[in-house]
Figure 1 (cartoon, rainbow, N blue to C red):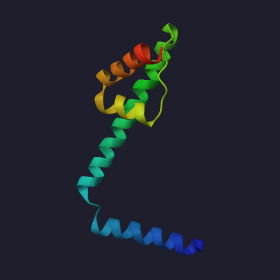
Figure 2: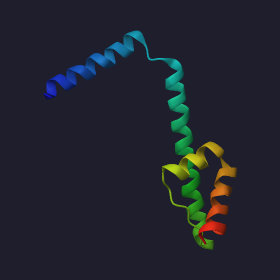
Figure 3: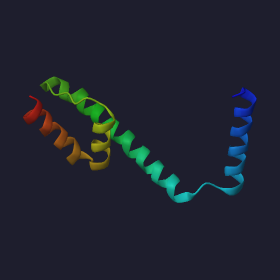
Length: 88
């Protein structure tokens, strides 16, 4: 595709969304999911920083971030239990 066609299509799509408005429910769902995913990554990061002193490390990937983000601290505890009892 030509670059001008792609840029023109994006501008038309953005203008259409600004005029008509984006559907509210799916955007809220995506925003809440994204926020929870970021919170999960932060939980895992700080756990790995403090857990390094006692030899614990949980890899940060999409699966573990979703568990830690959507379940919160109980999810982080379950990931830790899996790491201690199953993987070690």
